[in-house]
Length: 504
Image (cartoon, rainbow, N blue to C red):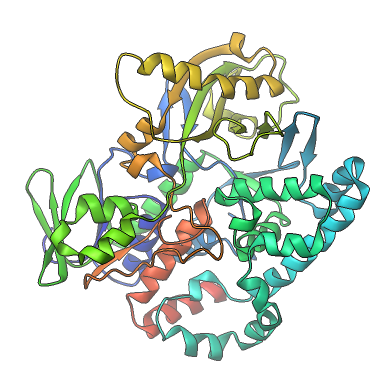
């Protein structure tokens, strides 16, 4: 276990992506995961025959060879693939005044919007076209080609100059918020609310806080169709682990890192909870910025000013989660994704007001016993005020009611169908995922600051995951792992892999 090239702390998607790529580049890599299950916020778990996703449930571009999804690019390089099932519509939005289906096909989606607001549908088309122009330029440059140092420039100029020319006219949008684009194209209040909702689902922030390239990517990829990986999010994690091990990397489960070891300003390895020391010339933390700088490093390892500024990074709230196993009789027409907004007079970001629902056994029956469904419902919930005391069980049950009310919009008798109930709180996230206050990452609005870099002031210490890239979701964290891994090898190494991936 001594003298590894790289130690990765945490087996979230960002950590596994970086680890798998570095192993593919020939580095000796070991991943230390505190949990007994790999995957971080994207892991899945089984209870009484039901298999639940703990986090992400919506995917695009997992199998499409033309996809921009960074995860697909990494799996290709590692020699792995996924089996998926496509579906349409991609979901339903439920407002107090009514419900409507959401289609991946843009025309079909706008036709649904036109039933509610004809002028809004016209404006939505203008909004989408403005962003899709940016996507057309972006799609010519694969994430697999990117890195974070100056050596990216000659690679882009030599290989992707035509795509750079396509992006050039859209530079103002590249640096804008979605709200800026919306203000220039959409006046209809109903469609503006819809755009705010889609941004919130994507980034945790409404339109004026979400960067335009993020939604451009989402619109472009969504138009190619949506799909669900057979086996759930755990199938994605398993594919990344297989890829890591295929190329000689190691994953250690139940391996809790207590401290990142630093000598004279350089990371030299880690110390485990059991006292064992593992050395490496590079350490990559997949923990959040708050956990990395507050838990894994000593205060003396960082300059006080830098550390304090980093720890003051605003965080997205945590979530309440409701995982259910239910009877599925007479639910033949059930669809898999739903978003319910309870009160349009409240801000959609208010805890409990917007509820997301996923029923993946609609597409993959193996996730539940025969004649049953798995249900995952979740909503924003701040960490503050939660304590494990005598009132904790009752508070959990009370806070879960907003999720039950949302589910009753889809399955009116859902409470009578429940055979297994699991309620997760911000404390559940903080404990099982070892996440600062159970958060899902920084809440940095567009134009209000830069996301923390993968680089740190400590030589040989890097970071990946949702604390380094805007957006809540698998593509963003996979991209963080790509950028980190590519930046740690010479240009020749990563362009050789890039050439092989593109030629295949």
